[in-house]
Length: 318
Image (tube, rainbow, N blue to C red; front, side):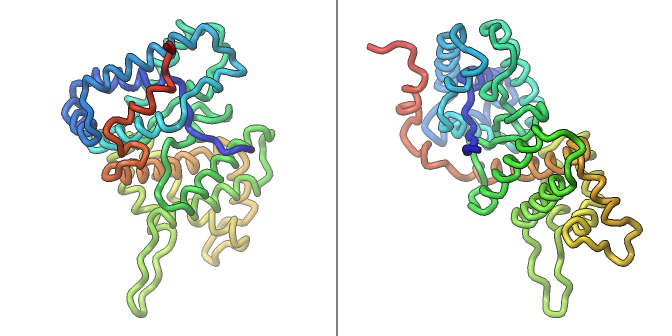
């Protein structure tokens, strides 16, 4: 499997920027964010129109099997997710994500009715103020290919591996072999510990484990996830470490009333695994927006990133 990148249709960026500009509650923060790269709201409105024109130019000729070939390079997604990260303290991003998905679907139906399924490049999602692309056909919101990844190269590679595993499972009939679900548990636990490592204990103290990392990530998730999502994640993590430990070490703890087979039976379907994948995706996304809040990616450190991005959306050539 080749490496997936978050290459999205120009329609996604047009509708995203229209939505941001139309939200009166975001004007101040959005303007300040744009100012960090020497741009303003008028600049963003012009970019939305450029993307819209490119979509209108491409839409009539799109074919389901080849629609993703006309997606824009990932640098366009990097700009968009960097803008979103500057808004992470304004509230939740889930409503924006839902509105974006709806807007893209409406335009796709109207402008490209020949597309009988939604291509990946027209499947955006925003989680924790991080932009991504939904890959595969297993779920309408997962797995999520990110526009930008955490700075730690180990976390970045491990998250990409998790996405690959989920995509592999979409072609396997349920119930899955228990090792398929176990692999996702092991990777999720490793990512959680890497994102928020437990501090070294004081002399003679007891080392904190994986539960410490998950608890800390859940505290950080509360202002970034809607209440119904946060409650579902909290319920999922309650006995999660015990299950993960048994799946990893085979023998349950002495005080456990469950067997290895009991735990293995709970990782054989997407319904059972979904909250775990959702949780680690939420944690990773909120880490990305946190890092980008104070960092400008190298590709945006120019006087105007549109000086080079514009060539991807040209519809006329002199």
